[in-house]
Image (tube, rainbow, N blue to C red; front, side, top):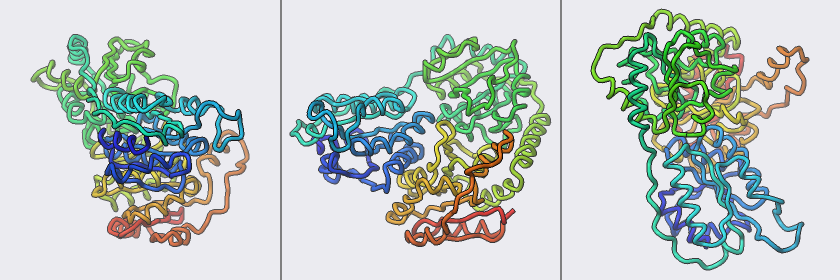
Length: 524
C-alpha cells in the first residue's frame, strides 16, 4: 500500500516530500523513487513541517510532510499550527497504530492521534482501506484548490501500509474557486464608485490578485492598507498606499476617514490589527470579499459580504465601474506624513534597527524571498521593508512559533531553486531548528542565514519592563554561531560594519552552500 500512496501523490502533482523515515512509516518509502518523487531528509519533524510550509508558500503547490506514529506527528503539530494560522496548504501523512491490540505500552502509542492532529488542521482522518485512502487524498487536493488553503492530516494504519493494494484511480480534477455573485459585485462597485474616500484593506488572500487590486485602486483613486501577508499587493510607490501599518494604533484614525471600505482576503485578526477594532467610521459602508464563508458569516459589521475568489471579484468590480477618472478625495501628502510618522515610531521603539534593515535591503535583490522568525529585527522589518510584489516576505505572524525561518527558507529554496531566498532569525529562535543547517549543507543550497544575535530574548525583556516586571529568564548562553555553522560544513561571516553587510550577502548568494551571517548590536 505504501508504494501505491507514492504513486497516487505523484499522479496528483506532488514532487517533493519532507520527512524522516521510521519503522512505522517505512512502507511509504518503498515507492518514492519509483514514483519519481524527491524526498528531503530533515533533522527533526518540526523542521520537515516548516520546510513543507516554505515550499508551499514559495511554489503555490501543497507541501507534503511524512512522519511516523506518535512522537513524529507530535513534533509536526507546531508547523501544522503555523500553517493553519497562515492559511498554507500542507498534507501531513503519518502512520498510526491499528485499533485493537494491547491497551497501552505499544511503540509510539497515543490515546487519540487523529484527534490531536485535528486541533491544528482542517481535518484529520484515518484511512480504513486503500480506496478510502485514495478518496481522502482527492479530498485533500480538491480542498487545497477550491477553498481557503489549510493543512490536513491523513493517517494510515501500519498493517494497511504493509498490505497489498489496487492501483490508485486517476485523480479527480479540483475545481478552482468561483467568482462572487454578479449582483453583489455590482452593488459593491456602486458603493465604492459613489464614495468620496474609498479605502482598500488587502490581506494574504489577495496575494494572487495584485493586478486586479492595483487596477481597482487606480480606477477609484482609493487609499489602501495591506496586512503583513498582503504586502506587495499594492505597489510600494503608490502615493495613496499607507503600507503595512495596520498594527500602528493610530492607523485607526486614518481608516476612520474612509466612507466606504473594501476588505479583501483579510480576516482583520488580532495579529493584523493589535487592537480590538479596525477603526471604521460608524457611518462607513463596509464590504467584505473572502474565499472563506466562515470569515464572512462571523462578520456583523459589513453591509455586503461576497464569497469568492479575490482576483475575480476585484476584476469584476473594476469592469462594472468601467472607464472613468479617479474620484477619491485622499491627500497624498497626508498619507506620506502618516507613513513617516510610523517609521519614526518604529525607529524610536527599536533604536538603530532600521539602519541594519536598510543595509540588508540594499544588499539583496528586490525580488528576494525572505523567511523570518519571531525576532525584534523582523518585527521592525515586516512593517518597513517594502515588497515590490506579493509573496516575497513570509513571517509566522499568526501562531507565532519560533524556529520557523531556517527550515521554511530551505523548503522555499528547494521549490524555487533559481530564486534568491534568505532566512532571518533571532539568536534564541534559531536554536529551535538550527540542526536543519545540516540539511541545507547536504543539499548545497546557496542560502544566507541572517542571525540577529543580541544575546537575549529582547522582545520579552522589553515586554517585562513595560509590565514593571524585572526581566527574568531572558538571557541564555549562546553558542559560537560561526563555529557551529562551520561544524556543519557551512560558511560563516560576522560583518563588522553596516557597509560590510552587502558584500557578505553577495558572497552568500553566490556560494555553493549556506552561509550564516551573524549580525550584532555593535553594527548600530
